[in-house]
Length: 449
Image (tube, rainbow, N blue to C red; front, top):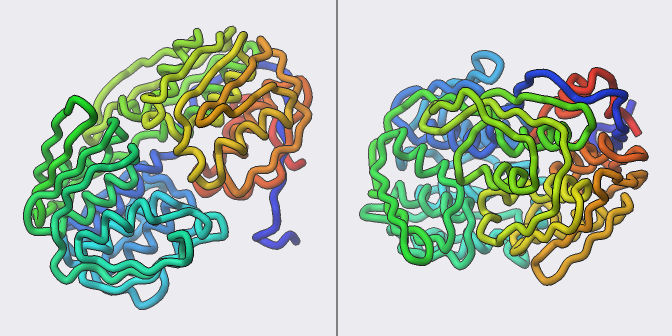
């Protein structure tokens, strides 16, 4: 029997027919993390449906329990959180292990900074390599103290502020995680927290703050956006329906665009305009991508997205679009590999501090499968093959689930199978990924390497 921590290699090959059917993907990871955290900060019991039950989100659920909230699963995707109110979290008795989740770790820094408690946080080998200064530096101005390993890395200890001060902070680079951490700390502060971001980033935190009753003001500036939060609100428990994660839907939709004869619909996909940069880019490339049944659920726009196979054309992706598709660049690079002509993705510096150096790793993924790609500064340039991806490579995933899934999508569309050295981490964000793509293919196109 294999050790649970042993590598889990997978291999993907072109199916005998196109992908088809109507499918659902797991709940949005960003919203799932926040639903648990805000439920823990609210007064009353929050009912959550559609929660992503991957390892990353389960780590957040465990952390909220350790901080005093009552968190229980009541059915598939259905969870109940009895909160303690803003400022009511208690000191954990043990180390908080955030596994592979950078989102959970960074948001939790903000949550802890505002409470007068001591806590220690760690993660897996991948997370312990990721820098946290971008969060701990601004949060220190609340009065919280942080101790980390060299380079601002986990394990991390925090002593939260006795009386949290409101922040007035301008983000040096656009980051929804840093913005959200600052807003979470601002909940415990007396007065108004003011955050300026240089570019609009995903606004799930602002939407959820309003959903729970906080006062949030947003103003577009000449160069960026101002978010103001009135501190020490009484958040009231509110039901949350978590939509399907657009970052997860991207893999099945791109696969359908690239595998001849495919037509696939993914239902109930989150369509927040600050998350749909990939869909806009694919349409610019000529993708047959349509949305039906558009509606609003829990303060977030959702719809059913259909992708149909067809030729793609290389494009230039502007740097300003990066915040709305930061997690989708690896799978976009796979689409670019199948397109005609050159695709240039600009301004990808943020990819260097993901689960891996995702920029370098994406270029390596392409090169291993016969695709000409180069990095120029913070740009990734891909020369497409007009649908003739060679494939045949073994991709090093570097414990990065999105790299692994992108490589397997490439294998479905390539002339020769594509293998990944380890796919174990896919379950952290997309439980059942291989099973879902095999269901759409009607055969086991993805299986053990």
